[in-house]
Image (cartoon, rainbow, N blue to C red; front, top):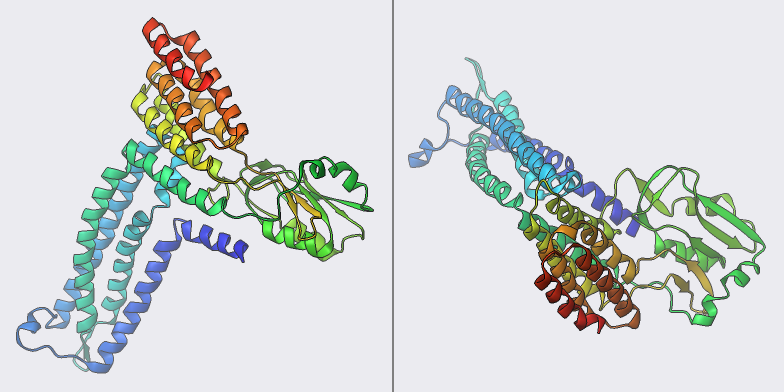
Length: 435
């Protein structure tokens, strides 16, 4: 079920899905409204008659003007979107284009203008005016007029949205918000039970208790987008297997690479092998659904570009550090699922490759520290980030990882700071975490 949800979520996030859906709705609306016009043959009277078309030529003129205007504005919207994408690509990096392309308002605006154009074409084709027969779809034409008015308002909203969306603070805030939602969905879920330390050390002995070993290979090259952890755990529990997975979502695998091992008492049949082949969904580019490091990489890329000599924008880098600090503070409170997953009888069934606090801390701050050598303000903010996260840290492992990062940041400061007072300030701050 979760696999289907992932595929449905990926389909919805495709740039073409929403526009095509809106166009399909417009086609259905045109057919339905023309059917109503044909049944009721509404004849407006009083002041209302000034709103509805009074003749065949009037109906054709209104529909022609609206359809021509809509396709023209659709081209303008497409051009504005391309300009925004060009600016985003040059300022924040090409990986951020996914965020802009997947924004609902961009998809809705483009789909709505094209849908209105298609709707007007269908209604225009239904307008008939001869000596023997005349058909003026009054209701359909009124809906086209209302749609044109709504599209004018939508254009104003779209221009405002584009102007806001290419601002650095907005981009970083959106990534941070999406990352926060993703983390809250990923980490509360636990599969299996926590093992004891002495049980973990006996994995090699446990492997020898099984008679058969089956290698799971990658069917093609690509990034792992989704791993059906729950399905694999249930299968391993049902068949009394030991499954070892070497990769997780976000990793890149090569065709025919060994991605896992299955230990069993009986030889696996073809159906079981097929189930294990479908453990992972592979794709050409990474997605954030099961890969929170992807969003962290996006923020790190923005910070790295901001610290490049050509841009030299430390304030953007500091904003990225602040948002990453918030993310890591949240991760100090969550319980990372164990890579060892046991069934109800405390039998080890799955050994998975999992995210760790240390690993995500490295992803978040290593590259920024490496790029920040020539910017004292950014290096000092990195130390402040370690101090803040350390105050929230719950386990000795977290504090050890934070201390290691603080030591590396201090060494960067000692090598790159030219002003003695800046270095003194850094050392005073480092005492709070290094002692």
